[in-house]
Image (cartoon, rainbow, N blue to C red; front, side, top):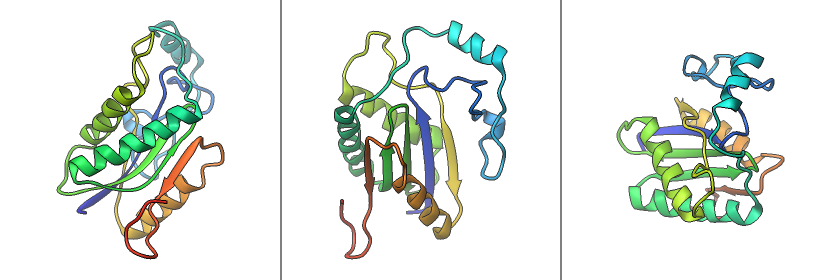
Length: 169
C-alpha cells in the first residue's frame, strides 16, 4: 500500500464541537497539533442545530460495522490493519494504493457502514467529518495499530495479525 491513514469519527451528536473533552477542527487535524479546547457557546450552538437524538452503538452494531469494513476494504482493494468500534466513535487504520483524498476513504466506510446498520429515526449515524491522520512511516502505522487495538471501552476490535501472513483475528 502506498499510504496509511488513522481515521476516527464519532457517532451523531455524541462529541460536539466545543466539547469539554476537546475536539478536532480542520485546523487541528495534523499529527502533533493540539485539540481544540472547550467552547461552551460553540457546543450549545451545535446541540441546538441537531436534527435528532445522539447515536450510541451496541455490541451487535459494532460487529456489523467490523464485517462491513472488511467487505468495503476488500471491494476497494485497501488494507485494513486495525479497527475499533466504541459506543460513540470508531478508529480505523487503513492502507490504500495511490493517494486518494482521506475524505473519500472515510465517506466510503461511513456510507457502507450506515447501509449495513439500517435506518435511523434521525437519519444520521455519524458526524459530518472526522479526524484523518496520514501515517508517514511503518513505525507510525504500528503505533496506530497498537493504539486502536488497545481501546479500553471497545465494543468490537479487529487487528491484523502479521505473524503468519495476513489473517483476521
